[in-house]
Image (cartoon, rainbow, N blue to C red; front, side, top):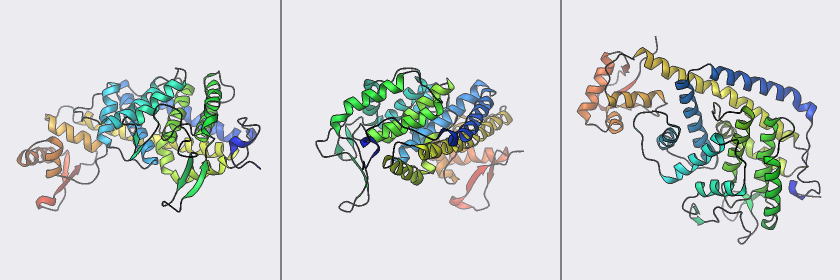
Length: 369
């Protein structure tokens, strides 16, 4: 009996229980339409901020799923620079951050462009600009080889690894990827939301690259969802939701890849994850509206550039407590200047000073009226 999906004679003719999915898919599509309608009602500046917020989350979380922690400021600045969104001072981003950003933007902003092997090679090269994954040199911008043995997905310490999955032999990849790309680019039958879930599973089952397959699979999902919505604007993040359900994500992938060609359980899980991603977009909307309302209330306040910079950092989700020393570091100013800036904002009622005194004194945004 075959051990993996791709070993079945009928591969890749997936099947699923359509009646079981009908009600769930209808509910997801309804929620998708409501979300897009609400976002369309926002003015252009607010939509741009929502897109920036969502894409920042997407880049951070798709990397976090693989255990990589990117600098949020670098990610946000790299995205803002490319999207033309004004966020004040930009910080330089290293080429690895820029590479992940470029991949995601090409997938979502150029969703109508055909998917080709060359385009996938370019995405892969953007993920690994140095040609290395960690300490290991890998084949970049080309399908993987089996020179070091079969491609395996493993976990656990060296010498006691648990093998979760063994990908198809490298010699099959040229044919398999040609078939996948033909399916991906032809006019799709069936629901496009379901097709995005099928593409994710199909690509990650082939595992065509030496590394980065998960990030590229999630980018393909974003591309097909953007095609479905006929819009490059992203207001929800599948990667953020998958990160929140990381253990369940890997478990359902492993179970599906070791199962028959009936992928109903995978599609049920995928639709549930997408539905929760739509719910998570409420957080995005709330954050964007809170920020907009804050600046509307203080539109006439004579604030200097340092104050605007750090206040925006607070509004975007500052980690930890804001102290005068952190203010000086963020604003690149002296401690005395930082104290004057903070005192002015406390006097205006924009910031609230915590009761503790001395160097540990912290500040927070005053509650909204």
